[in-house]
Image (cartoon, rainbow, N blue to C red; front, side, top):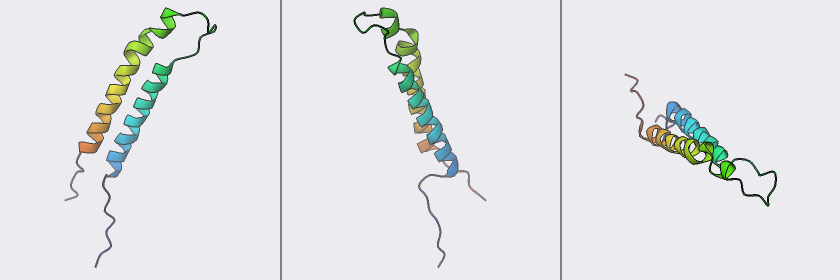
Length: 79
């Protein structure tokens, strides 16, 4: 009886999953942004900047698409 190591995802799938997770974390980091110099002053440009409103959500969506790709990708057969 052979003792085969059966894994759910292959090495390439895990690599794509890590890449997707890094892209999602980068998007969340960009969405969080920085702190205001004066907490009593509301700065429209800091809150509604292009980085927080456009770039960060796009990065999160791209990361989710990469994760879906990583899960659905089939390994190449070794024959």
